[in-house]
Image (tube, rainbow, N blue to C red; front, side, top):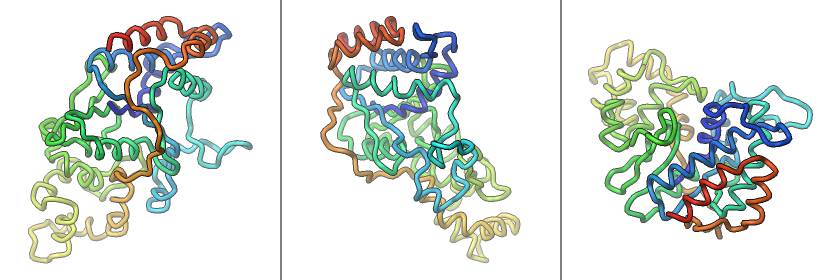
Length: 305
């Protein structure tokens, strides 16, 4: 089980009331929510391995170099002392992230990132390398639908309201939702674009047209060959739009496709712990941050797994 951790703690932050606070008044709604998410996921799916995948770089330079608008609207206004490309995060969420790091470490839940890469890339690399019968990717990010592969048992658990009843995204679900196979989802997303990531797409091509083009020409390369071929049965408007978007289409695959060859740090243990690695640290964190119930639930779930 591979967790898109930031996706889940953002979801927890907005799903759990901010009135959930530590004894000193610090909001801990994202921390408690994430711990309860993990408890529910482990209880429901009984994974042998669990990795909290991490954004060591939420906006990698190689993607920004290719498309400068990539996630640009999420960059916080520069404040002295901040990194120039710090992500805009709610004021009461930022202080909770180090607590999440400490709690995962104390429990012994593997947290894995890679310098210069997003969690998506860590997930893509681990999912591609997995030899397990089933690999579950837990994320609220549709970009990772490109990893779905029934033949290799790779599926996405896509939370709808919470993680208790997620949509299970397999090849059939991608085809039903978008009209393209999972293997073509990234090409489909490139054509359609994604304002939430600052990806412009091809002017005038939405989901239906993108799916139609992929269906007719197989993949992005086939669509581009058709645009360059005067004999191909493309409407003049679509041909013009595709040709005018050539510069974007040249670089978009580098941005949209998840990296699958990230240098993952060695030495982490993905096995789901049966008990906290450091019970004293877990107890101290629970007391300091008022995490008692969530910590007790997760401890019990791990013991039962």
